[in-house]
Image (cartoon, rainbow, N blue to C red; front, side, top):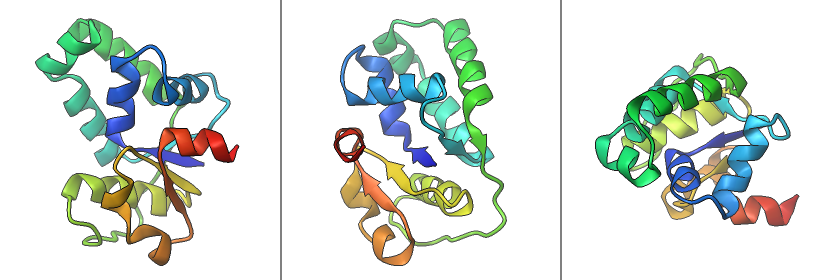
Length: 137
């Protein structure tokens, strides 16, 4: 089980090629199981629905809403039973870590690996880029 940082979804929607898109397709098609908590999904929704992002994605608000509905259907729910905050500098990263820790994820997938540098030493999970994820599979 993995947890996706919001920046991976942004990257996947901005480009039809690349490792982020490939990973998103794998999640949507059920080849990779990704977990999400309610706070993290709200973050996804907030960031992906911003007017500047919609313009960059070439999507309308209705199309993004449809995408998010579909994404919600395939993500595994991570119930937050223990708060790990504060562990990281960025509060948005804390949501990713909490979802991963509570879901017992093996990996956090992010383009900001450095921001999660304390995680491997504190938790039994790896923090990798989408490219590194595919190299390890």
